[in-house]
Length: 266
Image 1 (tube, rainbow, N blue to C red):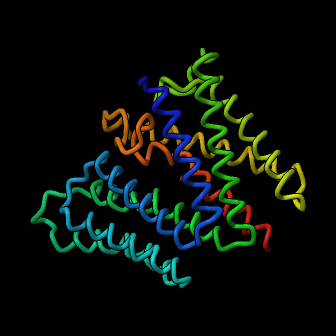
Image 2: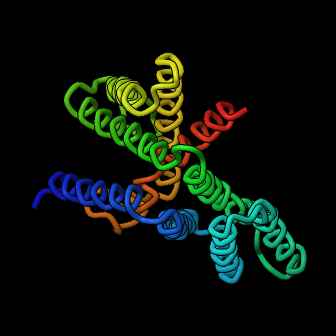
């Protein structure tokens, strides 16, 4: 079986699974699924960065991530305070082991970066499920990002000639433009069918913002892999690589949607 076929089959199964969970399962199932995605992605991130610091510090971040989503699950605002602990604990560990250890402040930065890069956006995603039409908005962002990623891949493959950035030589301007057009088209169609109270211009602007932020997220993860000299963040998804490879665009797009929805409710 070719790698491309594996990619298509994995995507098809994942789409069916997500539709079933989002549409038919209770919201707590989706929150637990988001937690698992956060833990898996966080583990892949630390495997990429390889921070030279005690494993107990990394493990504590996994525990904090679980606590974070538990508070979201029980609908408590305590989860906000958890993000300060993601900073406090590594710094405290650094203080009390300095100068006995050989850790550098850059290692601490890598430890702290993980939760804010991965857990914070996924926290917003879990919170969106509790908003009016929350499940439809989850479908919306997944559809827009998936449409953009797919169009970007094929437009780049068949028409790509001009490199988008030296960070990821495989990405082209043709692919980026094709992806953005698909983002806007999908967002507009989705808005026309399901969010009739919103103006077409508003949805189109949202589609553009999500598309651009998603592509930046994709390139950002490519940069991390290039720095680490690793092709894929993991192997959990055949044809796609790791969990972080699959949600890299979402991580930058989710805050955009959350800000938009928060503004709509003001």
